Length: 138
Ligand SMILES: [Zn+2]
Image 1 (cartoon, rainbow, N blue to C red):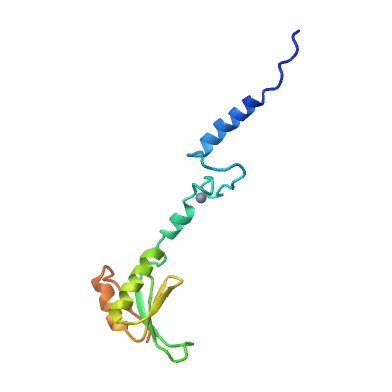
Image 2 (image 1 turned 120 degrees about the vertical axis):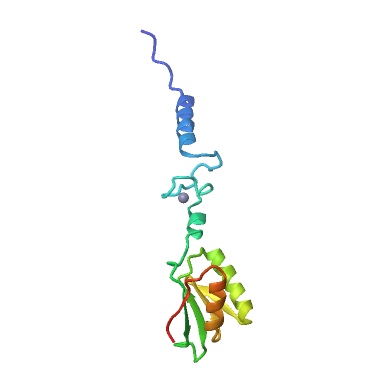
């Protein structure tokens, strides 16, 4: 009986490499780098955050309203329900603000334009790809 062959760590390493090449599409993951629980790619390759950013925030029922509650009497025009991802919502907010010559912001998927511009905002939305936009509230 010949003695048993010495252990070959190379075999194990090759096995792991083969295994990880199945898991990772590229080899850029550093050892010990974490993997994403959703897509199981390394964090470097994970696109979940980007995909999530591309998700539309609104339900597509575009509603324009005018509000002045809890704002020290300042009136703001709000647009809710726009079916756009955040980046496009920001762009639309900028266009609306410049259209109204006013300031404003985008918060929680809602476009805010300072001042009472509901009619103007509504007309702009209807002319720019949101023909179903509706006026609600006061
Ligand atoms: Zn991921």
